[in-house]
Image 1 (cartoon, rainbow, N blue to C red):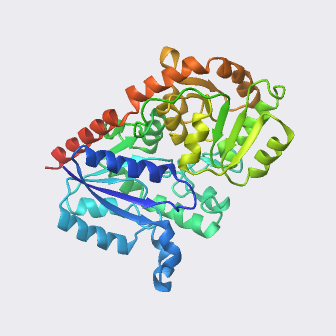
Image 2: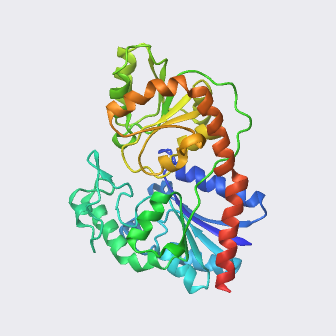
Image 3: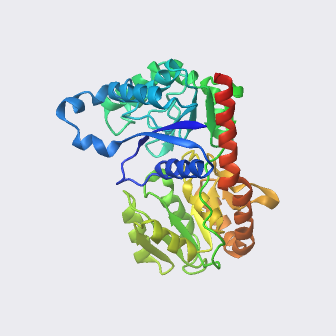
Length: 390
């Protein structure tokens, strides 16, 4: 089995769970004996491009001539069984799907966001969930609200790209939906259910969990959709010190809120932005990991990391989080509606039940998100596509 993995890497200055997942998946496939041929571009390269190439950047989400030529040559030389696409923007373009099909190569795509419809990919703008572009031939609301990179011009290009490539996306041979919510999004977009399989992302097994720490950890980009203000509102509804310690890690526009909370209360600690080792140490020192987004977050890596490390999860009931946390006896923790009162009500139960939920979190990871389980499923998807293409 030979697979080309196509991915436009996000800028390294902005931590990307998607970059981590792609790298992890490539490593897992190679360990399983799959010949992986990466076909990647990085948004970091844009700053160093020659002026002529930069001048063509505005149309690269639509076509990306350089990427198509390079992919064509790669497909001819490598003769892969399948092309697996992750993020095509801005340097690859969805046109890679057409290029692959022109060379008789079936395409699998993992859907990490909602960008078939939404220019930002989030279904979120101006502090609230938004589906204004759903069902429209051209996403003019995205242009009006500058949803892509805060630019009306770039939003117009992305909205045009989504309109032009609607037939392209519907030609994908097999979609990998990370959760049931993404599967429903694709069906609503017009993808036949039989062209969709649900397979979440996974992370390498870090090994037997270290002894449980104490308190809570919130680690995320400090931006409005990640819910820091929601969490702090819920936390302040309890007396200082009554819930143990809340550790906050990350950076972003809401950093002043974290710094203010740490200055006002003795039970809030702001750790600042942390590297991978720092996040591991902070997680090990905690008992419960909080993920409190208010947008329809697809599959937060922070939850995968928590469960693999044997840490309970407290999450808002949005996007793919209910799918990840589970329910009943298998639940890896607790869910709350994305509202301060609801989240505040669950915090004491999470503190009291952390030890039992941590055991279930690790077991749920081993059953549903371990590489041995997910890599086997991914190879089966590839084999189905390669066989159908013959």
